[in-house]
Length: 279
Image (cartoon, rainbow, N blue to C red; front, top):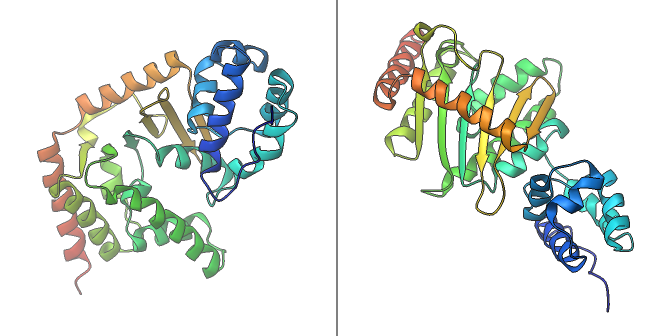
């Protein structure tokens, strides 16, 4: 019987690679847990590879070929699944985000990428890379705005964001840039496209003071938790770890302002920024 065909990198390579992995695993009569054990990963990790929500790294591909007897198929084709326009530390989370059904995010310092305007994104990237050429900044901004098209669908994914009050108060670019950025978020709320709560300074100490948090749910794969830092990113899939981060998010939402009060505060700060920009 002929082996699986090599993948076409132009046709959703990760999804196709995942489908081939599931086919080969079932043919070998192995469960996800049984395949994951010699790789020292969980069964849910194998499930995410099969669903295309996680990348197959070369070291895993080589071992999978040996275990499943697939004659180097996964090692040959995993390169197509790892190509990305995003930085390495963020690529896997961004690509999982694109197929998530629900995204819950806590943003401690800046407006989340999916909700940024062009001017705000440009100010953020310029702050990250003060000596970069305009061409480099343009490329980064373009990739970020392209991500935002994920919200063009009127209902999916469900996006629920908790913004720390610092996000509203920390000026990026100029007062005019901030006014535009906050009004954009407010407009998305008023169109009932997103849910936003603001965690006020008055809430004091909270459950996520050590950084940002993003939770993603999928139709046919276990949930993921994404943690991001400067030039670093961690994608968690262990059920107990994800559950702990889900509790953290629930505590944040419980401490935050209501969606209605949050909208009023966002629009009020936007007005203050707009007035500050007047000569």
